[in-house]
Image (cartoon, rainbow, N blue to C red; front, side, top):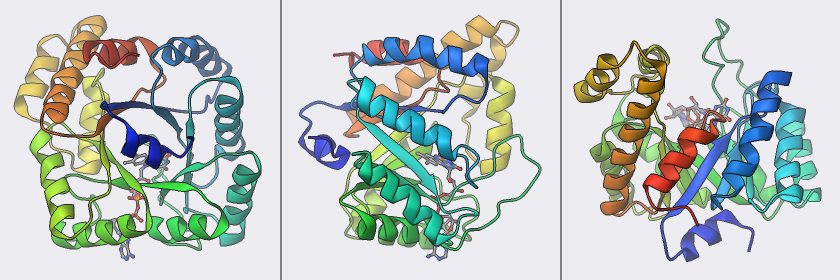
Length: 289
Ligand code: FAD
């Protein structure tokens, strides 16, 4: 069984999945080489591989997805974004995945990288839902989409954002959320989808905040709510990178425990290609197999 939606639906225990980036430099390549065997030992349910909106990682994402499929025991999910792409380019990418035996796609619109000054160039397909439909027509893929528990930062109001997500989830098989720090935000999203008649798995995305500066930057850009307690715990130890890391892992574990206790189907960890924090979260939750 290689379709992630089926694996999640049939899992008798909470799933534990991870997100990886394709390396951008010889240093980040070396870091990934060290991390991959450590992460594989956790037997994650699947790993998703990011895609640089506009195609900046087109080959590297493809290569890492195919390598993970062929050389490891982990099932990969390829991220793909509509941004800056023609429809024909997206078809070519999807057909190439299909030929390589890749069965799982995360259909996204895309965002410019955090450090980019340039805006996002929209693609021929404007929204993730259009890509989810395209992927359905190209192959027998299991299709995931992104969800934003506190609403997408560009949306005018939460109700219309929820309605658009519900339409997207009618096409897709499951959703993975953006990371957040307030468990109620996730359960409100699940309840809102249920009210709109959508009952597909929604896997919460979790991050260990290991840098106060990056976290504040992300919050400013995305409107993410950071509880004062999270901010204070990180601020208190901010003179030691090691202490920030271990407090960040504690915060991620506490949030994940609450999410799982209240019924989330699993946890998706944004690893930033960091094996040590991911191993600590997985083991801390008792989800290593
Ligand atoms: P969409 O679903 O297209 O939504 C974008 C905005 O348009 C929202 O405000 C929505 O309400 C609105 N909208 C949606 N459909 C319609 C419609 N039909 N008409 C009008 N408005 C509409 N980005 C990357 O660049 N690369 C990655 O690899 C990547 N991985 C991610 C992984 C996860 C798990 C998550 C949660 C996000 C990821 N992102 C990635 C970020 C993502 O691309 C951004 O959050 C982006 O801003 C929105 O993407 P989306 O797929 O939700 O877009």
